[in-house]
Image (cartoon, rainbow, N blue to C red; front, side, top):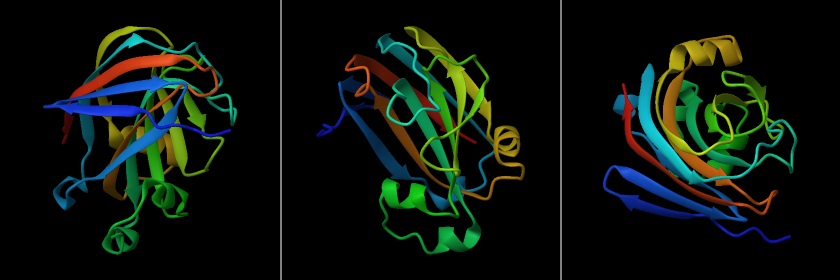
Length: 179
């Protein structure tokens, strides 16, 4: 099976996402000044989405949107340079909090990833359409997910995933604030 990429369009402070039977990750490093961030806030919307799936099942885990906050230890952070999201997320020193809109799990559920022990998903919205503003406490969620305090925030990633359900997602994330 060949996977095609989602379409991402930056419109000022809004990132539009279209996923039409596709899946991909858009990754960006963050500035060193954000390395000790404790919280984040954003607005997101879904005007067309996929049905709820089991996000703990590899190959059956479509979701409307997911926003990854990627952390590493200070030594790894100092040696990152230019790297890919795939390489970073497979590094044993990487931990990522993945805030999710979708799935068939209850709001607030904390899920193990079927792809890596370093990824934990927290369900913020179920599989539905609408507009929501999120305000997350990275420290509290990291401790709940991994049992210790976060290290250094080094990157963010966004994904929409519609390849397993062959669905279509029209969504956006905007006004992301990291503090």
